[in-house]
Structure formats: structure tokens, C-alpha cells
Length: 489
Image (cartoon, rainbow, N blue to C red; front, side, top):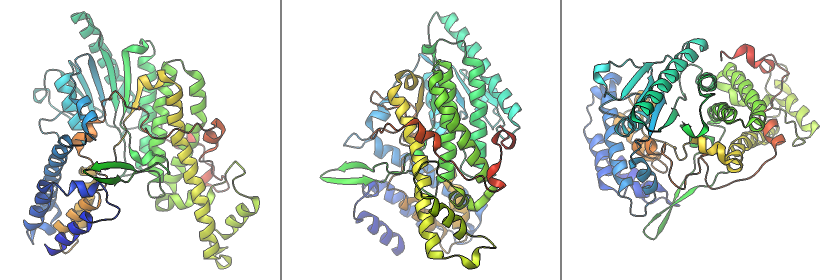
């Protein structure tokens, strides 16, 4: 317990202070963490199957406490988002890819699906979990979609759901002599597992194609697409947020593009552009779509290449990266290739020189992906019709979900004190953590929402800069693959 008290004290007194200071000012949150550590079971806590349910229960309890703290926040920081989520939406019919209804929602998608079921006259959901009709409310229709199937099957399953939803939407409007809006939520994204980043691109490509095939004859004001974003796609210089606690100003560190999340962020930006391309075509914004096509192709190529490079994918991308602008001298490019790791070159290699060049080229690569991120914002800012029909959620940084609970538990059972290990992971991330309920609420637009997902900074960049981003060397076999032949989408 002394270790926990020391950890709590460190974060309460941190300088500069972050949101963790406010989070740990709530004694209910502190008590939940302390009780979890105190209730240790020396034998069972070393068994993953027995320990995981206890860690999962802590996550459930903690999310409830975080949500209560957010709703009662005196400075109103979280208020507009919760107010928007609490607004009834009887004039909308929803389609969710993917998520499911459950009487005891825990995940982000489960929580906002539950909210939709309470508000909307009809809700259609796609999930990998098969649900029995007798366990669902009368206004819910669920479809089993296996997103790990081959692409033709996934697209077919999506088409089936969208066509069923369209039929139900039209029938409801006719029967009730009313007009409702069809809102399609796309929540599918992967960070772990077998080739998750290629999967991100492929499932978004299937969704784009299915959307174009089913929505082409709809009136523009009759539909909207909402995309679950992640702050991992914010550009690398995105500013930290500020939170006021009494007379103190606390920092909320911004999650953004770094070398640690680069491939994931690239795949999520690829998803954004793929779906944005569909929306632009449906709105007959063909000039916008023409700008997106080359960017999508380059992201697809690099995600495919990164998947083949495995654990060293980021280093390999940097090593093979060749900017198309005059941002690096020819001599530096040749020197970098000569000094890069390799069996024949290794004995000539100067580690300090290579490291310096690596850092320089790494910055170029991150700057290029950041320009892609800014380009999304710029098109939203310049094209109101686009942002009226396409919303990317803003503000989803870290929430305590099974995405974290499972790997943290796997690591924890190997530690001397598994419970303390779990609590340490939680406290370290309180600096910018949000509850799953708040993350779910972010899917509903507020009056001041900037739907592109980045509110603070707009910088109109040239199309040439966006189009050249992520260009990589094609001097090796791995880096000269044709995307259309090697991605299964």
C-alpha cells in the first residue's frame, strides 16, 4: 500500500499539473483504486482466467465514477457533449457498423448503441456477436457481420444491412407520414491482432463501396455519416488542452501522431479518406474526390508495406523514405542509404551519423503524415456541405476498455503485485483519460462541434504537399508492391 500512496502523491503533486490532479481529487476514484489493491488474492491473482474478471470489474466501476465526475464538473468542460448526447433524437434512424445492444453496456459502442435504442424509432446494428431476437428491444434489428471474411463477403454483408435499413427507414417514414434522417455510424478500427492496420483499410474500403452502391439516389439532406475518430490522428504539433480547476490551470496532454503510433494513425487516416471519398462522391463533390484519390493510394501502399515489414515497420519506412520535395539534399539521401543497416554495409556504418540522419528523416515522415491530418481539417473548413454530412468524433484519447484490460492483465499476472500493476497503468493515463460514457457521447454533435475532429488549428496546405506525403522508396522488393494486387480489399 505504501507504493500506491507514493504513486498517488507523485501524480497529485506533479509539475506541471495535468488532468490527473483533478481526477485524483475525487475520493471515490481513489477509494476504488485502493480497494482493488487491498483485495488481493496471492494465488488467484497470478491466474489470468481468474484475475481478468476482477480487473474488468474495476474498469466498469472506474468508468462509472469517471462519468459521474465529468457530469458534475463545475467548470462545464464536459457539459456541452453530455447535453448533446442527452438530447432526444426521435427524428433519426441509425445504422451502426459495428456495435451491439446489451442490457449492461460496457464498451464505447455498446454505450452509444444503448443511447440510440432509447431515442431512435429504429436501430440497425452489425456485430461479430450473434444475438437472439428475443433478447433485443422491438426497435432493434441486428446483423452478423464477419469483418475478417474475404472482402466480397464483407461488402455483401454490409450491403444487406444497408438495404434492409433503407427499406425500414422508408417504410417507417411512409407509415408515420414523417421525415427522419438516416445516420450511419462507422466504428470499426483495429490496433491489435493479426495485421490490424491492413484490416482497417480493407473494412473501410468495403464500407465505402457499400455506401456508394446504396446511397447514390438519396436526397443529400436525408442522411449523415458519423465516424469514430481517434486523437492518434492529430497532427504532431497539435497543442495540449487546458482544464481549469479552481485557480489552477491543468494541462491535458494531446494524443497525436508520433513514431510510436505512426502505422496505426496512418491506417486510421486512410479510413477517414476512404469514407470521406464516398461522401464527396454522393454529394457530387467530384473535385474534392479527385484530391483524395492519390492520397488514399499512397496510404494504402505504405500500410501494405508496413504490414510486411512486421515489428520494424516504422524504421523500415524511414529507411526507405525518399521525399519528393527538396526537403533533403541528394547527398544526404545517398549517405543515409549507405549508412543504413545491412549485412554488407554494417562494418562501414557510423551509428552516431546514422542516428542523426534517422531522426531527421523520421521528422520528415511524421511531418508528412501530419500534413495529411491537416488536409482533412482544411477540406471540412472550406466545404460546409461535406461537414454537414460527415462527422469525425473529436476528443477520444484513452478510455479504460477491454482494449487495455486484456493486455494489462496478461502483463500483470507476471508481476509480483498484479493489482498494483493494473492500478499503475490506470494512474499513468489519468492525465488525459475519459470515461467510456463520455467517449460515446462524443458521437453526437454539439452546436459548436467542428466535425472534422480538430478544433483549434487550421492551416491551409497545398494539395501538392498532401499528395506527396508518405512517398517511399521503391528500391527494394518490399517497397515496390502494387497496392491493388496485394491488399485484399
